Image (tube, rainbow, N blue to C red; front, side, top):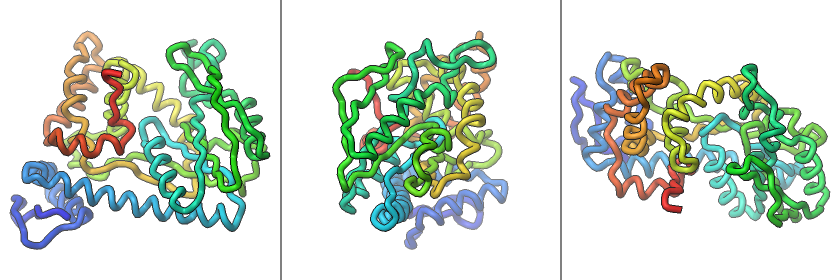
Length: 347
């Protein structure tokens, strides 16, 4: 619970009463609606050492929402013959993290999730479709080997053991490394990826056997219009952080890719969000504080010679400049729980 409240004149003060996270976020929105600086309240909480409380309650609220989804999946698995959970969402929305949390909860219910990443069914780079500019279209639904995926899913549901592919991003090829998968009586197949909700993904499987989950990452606090926060910025900042840590990409490269990512989402992902049985928002109030130190440095490296990306980098930097960072201790406590915060540095 949070100890910091906003007084009538917009200043922060400690209170003997304890605020819930919902009340804390509500205070920020109320300050903003009055034309005041809502982010000051957030920074004040961080400076008073309240980050662990913010994080803990945010985690609790996420868990409660996931428990409701888990309960529905479990019910349908036991009473309606549910066999597949489809987890989709745009880039850096939190699909992998959400799947991992759901898997733990389902195991507690006696169900064994078997996760298959759709990324491993990408076609080799020389087989991918091209975008209107003649470049490889990395976002296209038809970059997946749909025939092989359909065969493998049908075989798995029939009880067969299947050799599972692994996509090698370095080689740009799908490989087979001896990994196999076989579903047992208590197994539930998870298909996780950008295009999991597309009805053409596995059209031969009956809809009654599927549970569709759409993952989003809409910022829980917008810090007022003066912050210049775009609706996609939460995921873009995550993506800059992740691309650098896991793929060695610069912020400039990520910013250059981003328009194509958004174009692909509008074409191939968002039109099917309404098909979902449930939505889950992975955004948390401490996110910008968690990634600030690393991402701010990466954004400084975007050169002025790239004017489009440079302007975006300057805008994002201005946002991060106003947000207090988490301490190393608080960051270390949360990073293992969030896939986009994991670093491959030194590995």
